[in-house]
Image (tube, rainbow, N blue to C red; front, side):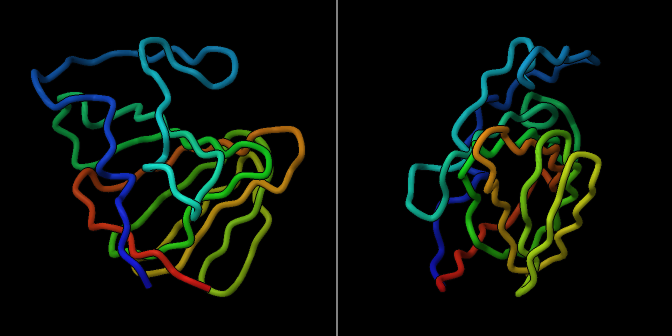
Amino acid sequence: MNEQSSSCEISNHPAGKPIGSRILRCQPGFRWEGITPEPYKDSAPHHCGVERTTLVGGQGEGTAFQMRYIEIAPGGFSSLEHHQHEHAVYVVRGQGTVRLGSEKFGIRAGDVVYVAPHEVHQFRNPSAGEPLGFICVVDAQRDRPVLVQE
């Protein structure tokens, strides 16, 4: 196992002056006004075709969580990893697979995935056409993921 940089370390929203209540309008293609998608993590061979958009948290809010939109391009995949923090995932577009421990499950729009602490996990989009997009809620303060080598 190998410890690598965490998606927690990359942020497009500097901490600073707290912001007030707001509405983020979803645009075509699952983009939100005023928020630029960014890479999931620093470039590396253990993930491919993943973008992250932080919707809530990291912009001066006092939340103990972050709400992020993760999009995996056709043929893409997230890191195979585990960590102490939990994930709550709600799939909003496309289809794909999630690995939880040693099992793989098909997922599609409307499905909810809970990733327990220390559970090895990975999201994949094997499709040739449509992105796999999901809302991911995590603790604002998280431990660093540990990569799993196979």
